[in-house]
Length: 149
Image (cartoon, rainbow, N blue to C red; front, side, top):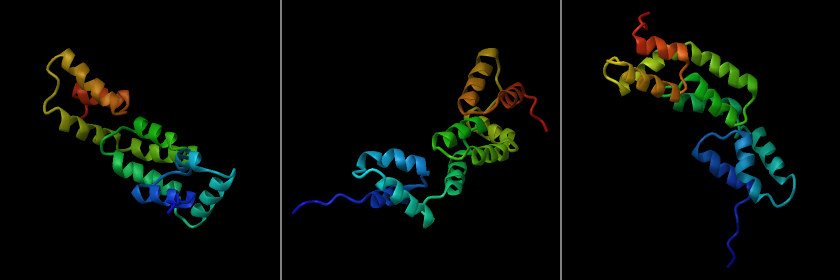
């Protein structure tokens, strides 16, 4: 008895059942399974028309999962890598910037329980926050102790 491979639509639904995927991500992941040219685009068009693929849900999903740990620039990178519309990415990042200081403070406090005692420790803390995608001005305010609002 021959084992039948899942259809492109079935594979896409399986991926979507795990987490939200953008259309671009699905195209990238499923391209190698496309046997007839254009069949992947048709399957994704159908799923998009039925509401299974939603760029807005992808943005919301990334923000819910990552905003507490990462800065706006790192999240912007992730959203762009998913092939989302530039305006949707810009809107999401603009919303994040308003809470950047509070989120950076929470990440900093969780990792470091005290202010930097010397220059080497200050550099270590700054590098940590920068790797998480927080902006230079926010990092400087936090690590230098000038974050009192």
